[in-house]
Amino acid sequence: MTVDSSPEAQLEPTQQTSLGTAAARNLATTTKSAPQMQEITSRWLLKTLPWVETKGGTYRVNRRLTYTVGDGRIEFVQDGATVRVIPRELGELAMLRGFEDEQVLVTLADRCVQRDFRAGEVLVERGTPAQGIHLIAHGRISQTSVGKYGDEVAVAVLADGDRFGENALLDADATADYTATAETSGTLLTLSRADFAAVLDAAPNLRAHVERFGSLPHQRQNKHGEAEIAMSAGHTGEAALPGTFVDYELKPREYELSIAQTVLRVHTRVADLYNGPHNQTEEQLRLTIEALRERQEYELINNREFGLLHNADFKQRIQTHSGPPTPDDMDELLCRRRGTKFFFAHPKTIAAIGREFNARGLYPDHVDLGGQQVPAWRGVPILPCSKIPISKENTSSILAMRTGEDNQGVIGLHQTGLPEEYEPGLSVRFMGISEQAIISYLVTTYYSAAILVPDALGVMENVQIGRRRD
Image (cartoon, rainbow, N blue to C red; front, side, top):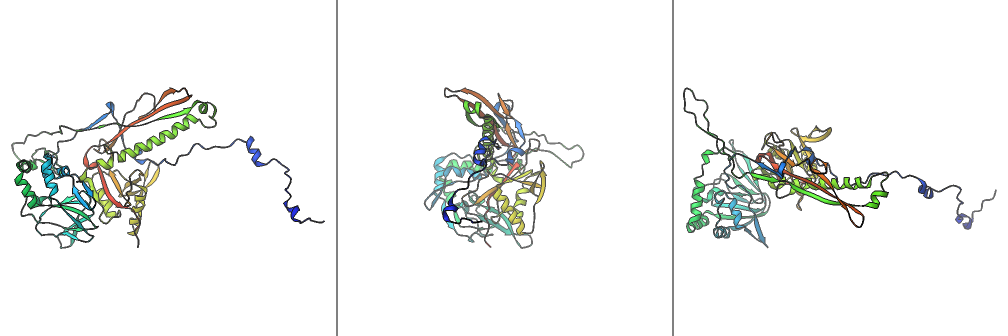
């Protein structure tokens, strides 16, 4: 048999003898998935928060009376290389809390002297006379002291907005009981005792305010600053018992329910003709609700009015000792409250926790949470929350919280029984059909979060999550 191997014969197309797949697909039924969405996350915060019914749209947190003596962060403004403290932010100092004379505060702010420091520089030496208060505009500073057996012990790690040496302003004999060393380069402002005294002499209203501060009934407070409940114990016979009562805050904080909503629009032609095998309206609604729930969790973390990151008590904020999240840092965060129920961290932060643990030969436990195995430390689950932000410096935060009303913890707030409720606390209302034949639905959810007592929530700030180079 002779085979024609000429180029013309090889280029001749083979004649089709059966129906091709491209044409056959026109008669076939395609198997389709439901619409997919990358934005959906695990939303552990929404799942684990106990949700409390909030009738009237407002939740009031009643607490025992607490003497507020100023314990917040101080903010600064920067003009090129010059840093200035915002005068009213000086009201965060204990002795200046509630002082309203703007001109005197401006005078104090103008007397603050800027000092730029470098990493490793000793800013205050233990045992030396304390000359004034130091306000940290930027950078990390560690405080160390000498332990009982002569070894060096860590006292605290301070960062942006913190201060130290406040007792030096009124006590001429004050000495530093710690050594302050810069861990990074940065800037601080110093108000000397001499400058403060000069302003004090020139401003009688400031002197009167400071004297009133000195007369506050410190002896009537417990360690949390709450008004003392007088009692007697260990007595015998007919001892006279003290009378007492539990005093409450006169202006307790109220949390109003926040809102997230959108208008979903679906053309009637789509809703009528393209409903197989998936209902177009239901799928549009499902994905809209998913996006709404994602925004709800974001607001619970980041909203300035009620978000957990912004409303954590300043005394419950700590810094890592070296940058990355070590087991020691996790223990310090854990020990600041009783009954910690959950840790929350960005997934990248959880990876950094794992690296630090592995480097020390430690491996986090795993606990069962709703049928799913999750990493844990000291039996407390470490849950991912991608809504916790990561800064440009590649740092983030770790939250530790106690939850529930009975435990005086963190709670979620919502209201159920809404008109046309689709899910608990979420309603879908039909808004009508426009002249362009478009159906509109108003999708709404109401929510907030409340921290019942300050130690219910703790935050470890400025956690370095980048991988260190060996």
